[in-house]
Length: 156
View 1 (cartoon, rainbow, N blue to C red):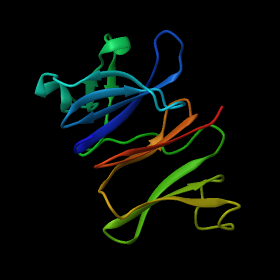
View 2: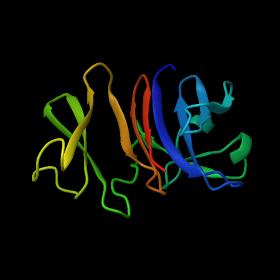
View 3: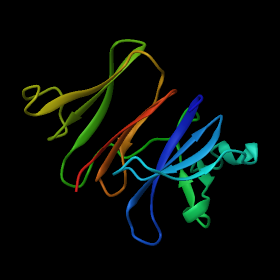
View 4: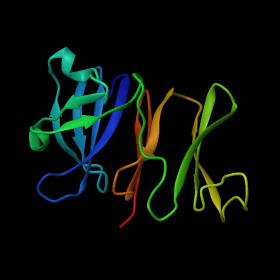
């Protein structure tokens, strides 16, 4: 993928499962975050469709999401969920700026507890610019997106 601009989650209208939309200079893609399989690809969209618009920074869906707008977080702003209903939290820190790190914690406080027990350093963005990090609305999927790639974690 060339120059990722942003990512966003929505639910599959048919199954309710998480779907990840990736927006880049090469178009838009929809991915199943459990398998990483590409569900649909739009390589030649109207350029205006790939720029998150409006106060909600959303892009129109396509394929199975044709009637859905998806909020996008990344280069143009916005954000993903940073907490889940059961207490997991994701934070972005920059102790060695401009290199950012993503930290996952169980109790929402990365400054207390033991590394590897209460919090985990899960990603170090030292080769690409961090675009977004956060959970899907269901809390089952976590994404870290950089200017060059995406990393996904999923739980049942």
